[in-house]
Image (cartoon, rainbow, N blue to C red; front, top):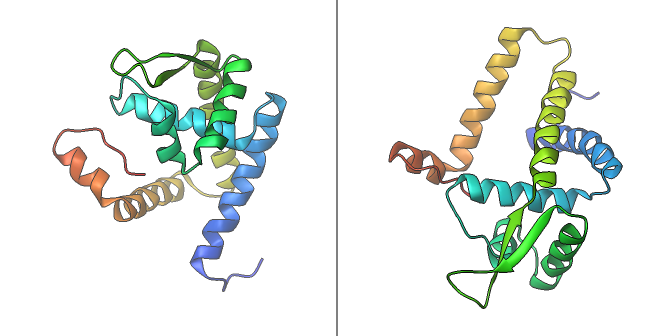
Length: 160
């Protein structure tokens, strides 16, 4: 493979290779990458301390239109990955919660994420993998400085 390609293209190619393997496993579970992305954002918002998550929150987090998100949530609910119930704070909204099936899938996908990463790091020493991880973490800090600042203040916010 050409080694003089722009860095952005390198990241793009790695992302595509990673997502190809992840999507193959998701298809076995009857999910699309977009549906899994919604479940991942649901988990991220819950981890950030947001107790009630509605469709609008997911639309903003995933940059998906209202009609599209409506269909995604309907499918996820039909497949047993989420439940929808009226919000206790604002009855106009439905609160979307992951089911145990979604939590188990997320754990399985986290394990798969690690396996794919290890496969992509084949031939690298433990020191090189550690250095790569630290470098990527620093790149993420540079890309999302608001999350870094919020963590210094004791919060758990992540940027979109």
